[in-house]
Length: 424
View (cartoon, rainbow, N blue to C red):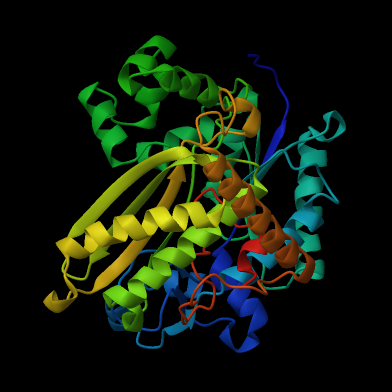
């Protein structure tokens, strides 16, 4: 841990990313209020909004029926996650022409540890300018970003949030706390509603109070070492947060209205699971737990989890899913007219082959070993076909048709899907 002058970190935040990509692809949307939606119905919510829509108060999570009242001229467009991932990679290719990328935080955020020769205000500003111009020239003129530069990545992110859209803000070590004191506590990354309440109970009601507290007091308020780390980051110290590994792989989906019957929802659950096992194998993991959860249109929830010996082929987990679905059917008989709104499947207990104690087959019967080998071989053959043709050429069961076109594959906070996940 060290504190020294210099603008060592650059943080880039793409402005209204999903909506900007749509405006880039469809010039007639430029300058118009746009909401990106998961399905074309007024009962859904906006998952992104253009700055023109934000001017009316529309934001992520705004119900569309409310958004249309707030802005009668609102243009709703169906989300195209494959397109956003494609632009994401094009953006990364442009950024690395100007500075190394140390971490991709999400589909629209990344940070760079500036090389030693680019840490002065003049050189850092030059890097930021080249990134912006490169995006406009080589990716799209509708693609804008805000950039923050500071002694560490947290302060750089805070700086990037200070001026949107198309901003460039620098926070120098020697000027701290400076502009930080103009912010609200909830403007800080990691300080949401609950943490804000904790801070206020501790007598900290503004940024000056947070700045003037001690690292040990921050640790006590947060209830752990993360509070102490936050204090040091806020004061300009530069050190990295320990990385955590994969703990689960899963997919979930809000079902299209015509896929909410139990029989069609079951096909969706199977499809999500097949995609999850494909990711499992690509990452080199085996899983020992399968979780299935559903939510009905009436708001009822059901969840179950099953444990098996570590496996990674789709057939083993599909067999387990069928057993779990049978239990679900007892809770929600078809005759009841139930409709499922959301399906989630999660694989957990992840381990690589060398992390699994003993042999994968040490307690199995000879027939079980032969079956496992057959399933592994067949899964490997399916993967080779998919990798060769960059799409699925063989399907397991019936594939449910969705309005978005990509079953289970969407962009979640902090996870950018691989391009291969859109090979349907």
